[in-house]
Length: 274
Image 1 (cartoon, one colour):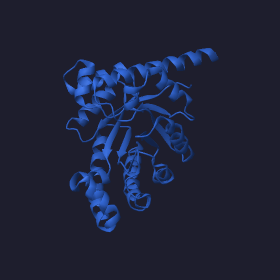
Image 2: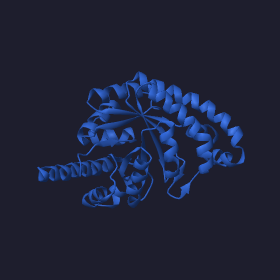
Image 3: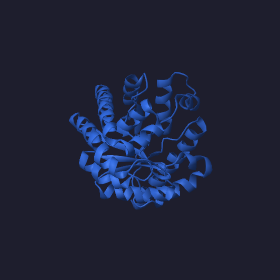
Image 4: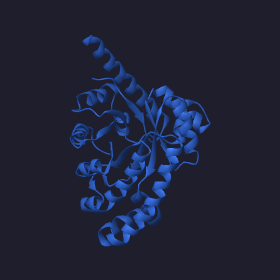
């Protein structure tokens, strides 16, 4: 294994506070990142203290990944999940207008991240789930990618790197995302044996992959089993991180054990090659 690069994604403030033993949200986030030893920490652009949190985490030596809800997520928030998904098939033209309005909001969030000196920007739209696509792949390619391209262009103009997040298997979108200017993808909402497949597809499209640790596995599997799964994935994600499903201090503690074991494994193998 090569040296491990790690990240922490979406975690509720309550879980951060309990794990770190610190009540103040930003201080708890910084303390948790330090305890886990992660290189990258996600900051939700929707949170009220997002800019201050990004500055504090960057000051602690972490790279900030500024997470921006994508246009589809924003329309879903206003119109409802089921109604929006139905509209992608029933009235895609009318939905495209609402997506353009949501795109302007997303661009404003990106610009706030630029002002907060974020280096990485995660555009998050769940287009699929463990059961398959939630929207038509054609709709994603013909309508949504246009909005993603505009976001990636804004991010690139600030010298940042754009990363796309969706649950499920959205490999069909990878070449279009790379062409649109994205640098990477966050893999989530899949069985562990799909991680290597997704990472390989990302690499083949010119994207780096983030992922490898499912919150469900932190509860149902031992540390050694999770580490073995990551080590055997071919290729392994470039950045090892959770899938966004950690919701409590116990999950964070289990994740900390996995990251420590990964570093130990990587360090022992590097030492053996010297």
